[in-house]
Image (cartoon, rainbow, N blue to C red; front, top):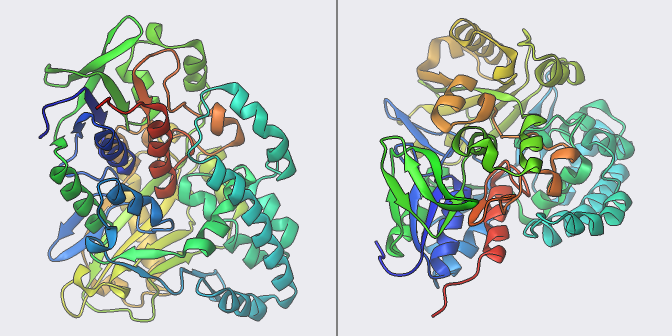
Length: 495
């Protein structure tokens, strides 16, 4: 641990908090990183059961340079600590009628798959990709690390955002270029990866298409947990103090200045600045008195619209399923109406769509020999729905296992082993996520850029925010970029 220099406290050791801690250390700060979990990584925890390993959260790496930057801050190379391998396909879509669509690989391979389903959509896909690149050039390359705590910054971007048709939804953008219903579904699901409904999410998030094409989709050998382990070792080499199983109950303040934190056990820690990687809704609702907050912050909190919840079933199998891809998007019969149930009606429907992760397709070390490791993620309403998860979770588990057994995992009922699950209640209890939302506030236009929780706190000095609920948004590239935002706001320690 380094004891010299101004002290920065980082609350929460998700990827945003880890990146913030490293960037602050590179600026000369003495850094203490606090997290209530047993290991760093935030939602990127690692679970192990009976010889099966599971990445608990994110599994897709789409912008590896953002990790490379963290090692480069200290003259190191990521490739010496983490092995990334490109996936092919990136995702396999499995539709309700049994048809599949492999997305990823070269542009020619993607066009060949589109041609197999709907030849007339090949030209439309190229036009969609070109539009996505234009959004990417502005939304990601220029603005993902730009602070939006001043409205003037937002106002300057409005003409360009209108020119890029950001008033459209992702679904509307995709439908402008593609006609086949299966392809419209396949190319509009990206907002769900960051907590948004494609029918409501601003088309700014259409940049994900080009992000994937520009940098590919990768998997870290050893899983996402191998990334957090390598970053943890980097922090230790740089003298960052890491305190786990430590819950921050409140910020300490002198007037409108953050001065440190108070822990749940009553201990107080002083700091020259505080960076919060906690859910911003939890930060402002539970850790800072309302009278200390700016009116704009209170308004955002009162009017916040949250992302969906997640039901995640982790399991192993006593056999292998070599025909199943690393990432499978298992589509149910309904699309728009199912999403309306989840996001608007807040109903737990009998049907579902699923994301299935089979890491053993790439890294056999995730399971004992002759076995496979899986997790299946099912979007569900968040806790605002009032669902009794003690009752509904086992029922949902049974329906998911039956659906997979009847389609892509035959005999799953007999081969499944070492299973457990998480519900939105676990996201609330383990990660202090407001309403158990999987991705903090939803990526609506009215909750993006200046309208999102600011990276520099409104009305409270020496407090900065990173993570999914802040600009630029959820997803691994988003939370890593949020740390780049505050990097540009915080001055280096004079030498």
